[in-house]
Every structure is written in C-alpha cells, then in structure tokens.
Length: 171
Image (cartoon, helix red, strand yellow):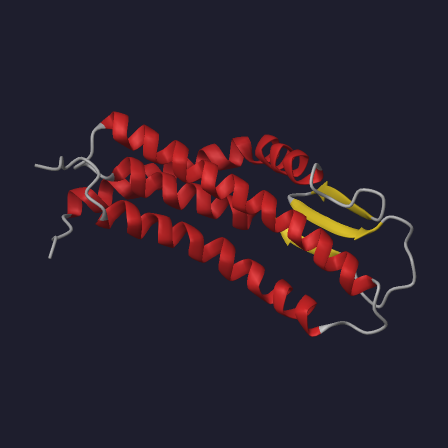
C-alpha cells in the first residue's frame, strides 16, 4: 500500500487554497460558460434558465399553473468539484507536470460536460414534472440525486487519478 507523506498532503492543501481563491475570482465567468453550454440543450420555449447570485434557477417561461416551485441549483457545488480535482491532480508529486496538465484538462472537461448535462436534464425533468397534476416521484428522485452526483464524480476522478499508473510504460 502506498503511504501518504505529510509533504504530499501539504502540496494538495496549498493547491486547494489556490483553487478556492481562483474559484472566488472565476466563478461568475465559469457559471456563464456553463449556462450557455446547457442553454443550447434546453427546451427554450417552455423552460427558462436564470443565473443570479451563484444560483441557477429553472422554471416555466409562461409561469403556468404548476405545483412546482422553481428548481434551484447552487453553482458552488460545481466549483467544489473543480477545486478538489484540481488540487489533487496538481498536488500529486509522482507525476510529471505535462501529465498533470493533461489530467487536469481532461478531468475539468468531464466535469464541465457532466454539469451542463445535469442542467439540461434538470430542465427536461422539470418540464415533464410541470405537465403533471402532482409532483412525480421521478422529479423528486432527480432533485435529491443532483447533489450526490456533483460530489461523487470528482471523488471517482480523484480515485482513478491516484490508482491508475499513467506514466508506467508497458514493457
């Protein structure tokens, strides 16, 4: 079993501090990018996507008669995944900087596409739920599963990064 040294933990923590500071500065542009990517997949005539104070809101465009409140998703949950994966990937000392950069780009691309997909899926789920007279079980399950998906996917990426020996050649 691989032993974790205090120097490794310190490196990851320093990258996490840098990452949280960068997220504080880059959250709004990232949220706008994420929203614009997700908007292309939205049912735009029926459902709206709004971003205010780091919260995505999804609802019916006409207001409509629905028992559902607007669906809200906090964007800082998305930023958590970016910061955590970035700090572990960049803080791993056994890997070359080139491999770390490639790993970071791939991980962040996977997270960006997953987050945009979650926003689009939320819009379609909201639209289906709003067309029914009572709140369906599928809508409730979707709303309850968004947060675990946003948290678990970065952890899976981190585990894969730490377990798979990317630099070892086949000989």
